[in-house]
Length: 299
Image (cartoon, rainbow, N blue to C red; front, side, top):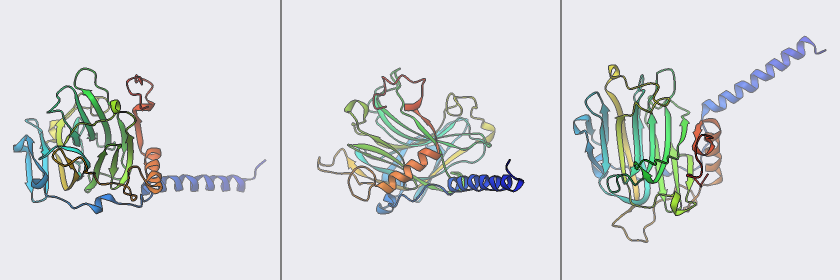
């Protein structure tokens, strides 16, 4: 029969293991080893973007913009030009407190050119209640959102930091072979082009917006936007756009987020991404048994 000291030793080892696991999780992912945002110059808001809707709910201050939602309106902005590919990034700071039902977003879309049949690449922050963390939702739509046959490709994450305390960099790299989502230069998701049918290929513009999505945003619509807490504010700065516009020649190539200057990720970047997906991923459409995966053959 084990002695009392053996039990104490086993208990001590158990707590050391638990502490090590929780500490490594709290510290965040390992270094990706390469920081593409540092290779690109920031642009002012006016250099790259303009108002899309809700101008009375926008405040532009030199290189930054604040947009807000209240019970009269939300707000959105749009890049001055459409792109065929590129790197699209912004530093964003989110509203603390009760934000259920509210979406703060940074995304690519061509909905205005192809209503009901558009492409989209999303970074969306799903508002929450004060006792729970924000959810960052990444999504890819390919020719069909809005036509009654919406096929989302959602992967949702909890962040390893509090996104309301400071600005953090969020970016989308979209090139002819892949889409990579990055948070503070850490790749969190890579969506490769496996076929033309499952990949957005038409030109898109970059957008930011804040709006009421009470019907689905927080725990499938369980918690709604509560305008006792208005205004809900999204703050954006440190904009970075580098890509190929529709006017650029066919030889134009978007920047790489890999140190090898080619598509794909380095081994160190993959290790960081695997850490995020192991520790922070809370939903993956490919692993949802309720989904019809004949509609998402890339799974």
